[in-house]
Length: 309
Image (tube, rainbow, N blue to C red; front, side, top):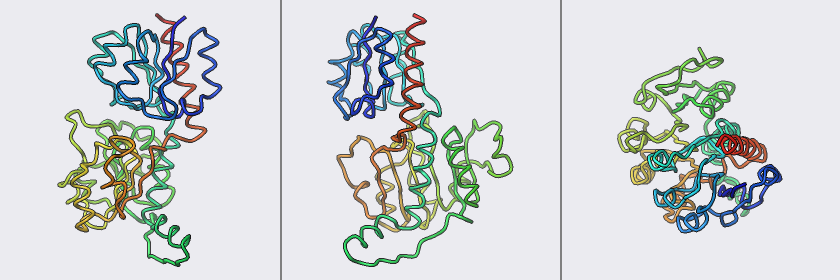
């Protein structure tokens, strides 16, 4: 059969038994460096001769696609494809398949966790107690708080459902939301600027805009106000780094919780190391259950795609 490139960090660090389905179908597995985001040089060295690619969030350049001389199918172990050069892929006739909603629960729960950690100053409190201090900082409750959800896909809807159950007032923006189903009547849809003006907490669950511009820029931060919190488990580029740091430094934004950086790991700690920031290492989908669901879906998609060729 063919060679399959495996690049998601969660699969190269500890290859799960689920990958055996590819071997049993007669494919040879080619792994990127274990537990690391592969570089362009890594991909250029590994992708030639591969007919299939089980891909993660690593950046993929036009040059990598040009080097993928035998590639027929790219199967993402998640939903986002912002890291892929779609025009180059389409020009080559390479099929792209995704695993929608596979990691939605894990990412949604982390987003809620970041909100709670920011509201209750959990890292600073825990660190203080661990070193023998007894810090007692007044926090805020999510119940009764107006929370703005930007993006009502699988993850955004799960976040909204949890927030409604926590008695938050949930407002949202998504031009493609369609039928809200169980959330109808519990979530109020507004224009984006209206969400920013009303929300005390904003959580991001959307792709990058087509123009590549950040959603949370200086203007948006001005609408949010000095007591607002922002949570980002979606994409680093949704938040303008310089505007964010300036707002945190000047007291125009109360805090930021993020699971995403560009690059990863971050080389500049202006955000990750800021005392008003709670940062995690892109672990939203890194739960045993999410990895298993995403891996199985990606493998099934890959085998189906290659079988159709």
